[in-house]
Picture 1: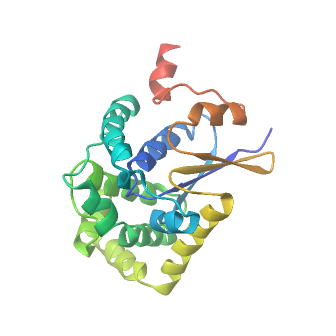
Picture 2: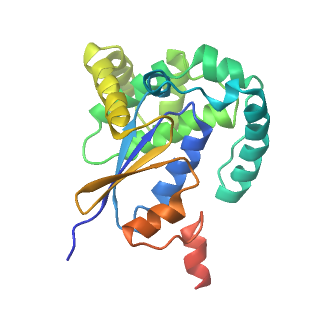
Length: 228
């Protein structure tokens, strides 16, 4: 029996396209029997390190993105909705504190990644559905509570998120993504026969499946299976 394929998913909750990629890969992890490694990283560091510019700073790209996300929300069945001031959310407030918080959640979690998956989802929901803050400690605490963490766990994660250890871990994850060739998120790295294959964006799943010898069954493989 061949070993399970490893797929690393690098993401930042400030990116709506990352949310799409995240949900699809969570849906497919059992369908494709992959070992999905969630890799929270800092998109701001990626943009700076790769010399890239976010699509939101180019007027025509931003107009396209607002329409594109509405279509993608329906297609992928992810409840995306632009915040009232996307520039404030993405560029002024940013996501550094949220990604450090997620890194701390991941460090504290034992035996899987269910907590980091749920907290990630709640942080995306706060920005890209409910138009809420993700920068203040009380905002992060609320997201973690909705994800099922206890009050004591939340306090420990908040404390840990400001530690040098967690700051360094997030920097290292971001550098790992850059070393693979990242210039934006989501970025998926599929380890196929010992060789890493990098895929950028939320529209490469069919090609990724082909390269892994799997089948793309659409954005909701559970629905596709029911129709077979």
